[in-house]
Amino acid sequence: MADYADDRRNVERSGFADHPVRPYVWTSGRAHPSRNTIRPETLLVVDPDVPFPVSSTRQQRELLDMCRGVLSLAEAAAHLNLPVSLVLVLASDLVDSGHLSIRSALPQFARPDRDLLEKVLNGLRKL
Amino acid sequence: MASANSEQDAPVRYVSPTVAQSVKILVVGAFGVGKTTMIGSVSEIPPLRTEETMTTAGVGIDPAAGVDGKTTTTVAMDFGRITVSSDVVLYLFGTPGQRRFWDLWEGLAEGAVGVLVLVDTRRLEDSFEVLDQLELRTSMPFAVAVNEFPNAPRHGAEPLREALDLLPDTPIVMCDARSRDSAARALITLVEHALKYTNSPKAFT
Image 1 (cartoon, rainbow over the protein chains, first blue to last red):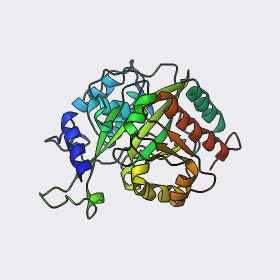
Image 2: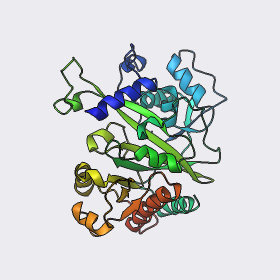
Image 3: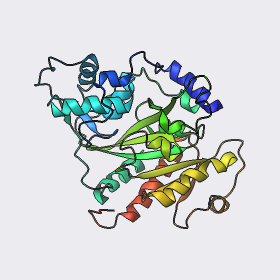
Image 4: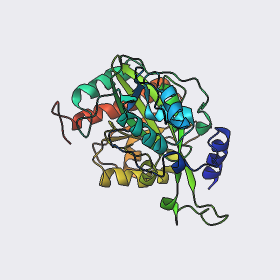
């Protein structure tokens, strides 16, 4: 209980306090993304040659603006102060419409392969 | 303390344009066990925080539900990032121990290298549920890191292995979440363990 209370205080401090507009309003009532190939760690980047969609919402424009460089979905969500689940829906639509690209190769297997694990291991050993 | 470290308004620090692949490790543990501290020790960015609202999943579990008309609970996830090579970035996602919390983040557990379970020796019982779930309900490799708080009782790894009822091949490592070297060592232990699960270059399991 105390932990939850602390958490709520942190929420208020970090600007995550409840918003008068419910998140589903921004996603036209959808709770699920149009594709399931995006995860919190998926790297996204905007395609600079494609102009912003004319009918875009403010949240979509903010997300596209945020993704001028390579950034994971979770990082974009944190910087925009939006829940990951909401940004997942927004990002899926923008990938579908060609405005946002998935930078990281789609994971081919359930778990990272040996080459990838060895790269991670070597990187951690250099820390 | 730990969860107050995240700097939401930190400037955006983009991933290097040479990076084309991302992987993740889940750091799970009870509130206040030092997840964010550990992530902050090794992350190249200040830990970031995202929130999800839990509604129906908390009914009957969250004691505050219904008291003041409150039917939702906010669950936080703090995370950090390490660029491990010119083309690979590793994310560390810190999430509360219970599986029902990490299910909140869609796809969070899918495709992970593995799970590092952070344990506080003063509250071992907080770790039982998550360890049970990892052993029984997932096939993900996991390792246990015991965060040695300054005033916590010191036990050797083997008595703790017994107390936590770990399988013989589950690695257990003592660490200081505040130390970069120590946190890195705990992560290395997990990745080495995960490599044992991955015998062929292209494993399907």
